[in-house]
Image (cartoon, rainbow, N blue to C red; front, side, top):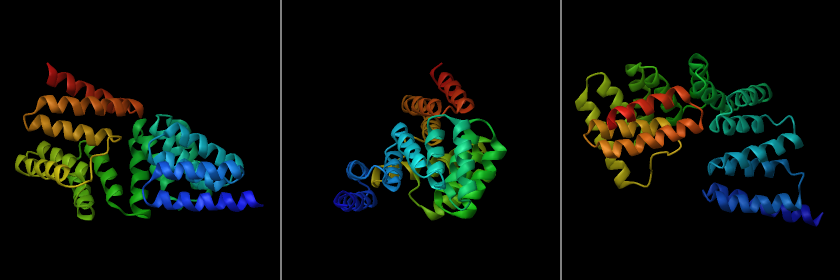
Length: 269
């Protein structure tokens, strides 16, 4: 009984660390809780989410798998494992996990996000649009609009991309990646003035505020690299494009990976 009480205390401390953004502190305290109460599926789940936040996907998958073993009806664990599996390019298993998550809890938005990502990476673009639209419907946010903007930009539908990216920026004025992607969409439509205004704004935000570009987002890296190329800085552009290609390969986003590789080769030639 004492072990269970102490375990609960560690889990409570871990929750405080997690909410403060100290994910490593959360992981350490959830580990203590698990060592004292190895049947605590909530601590496994929570530690798995903390691993997800630190982009330690393999450990996240291991913890979420243990969560499911302890509680096979916990839909959120399937959804989050699907997100982690999509991030490492295990698309089919990611989709199956998210499908199971939706069956168990159809209101849990991360199931649709994980399935949308896996569908997008594997080339099922209509399915991805369906899922990203569901995310925006269930839980409107700047990120949800950004994902729709990325979808339309990737399909060459620049006017729709600009619409959703503008909505994302209305919610989050410091969304660096949205500026870079919208700027490139404007450039592709012949609006160089609008494009360069967006590039300038993104660069100012990167310099002035703590918020940075997501280095696990191949589209953000690609958009920033393309922006630098269009601004006349090919060396900086190549570094971002190479990073974008690496992340796309990790996600097994092969069509996009090839696009980035081809652009990098064109710039270098």
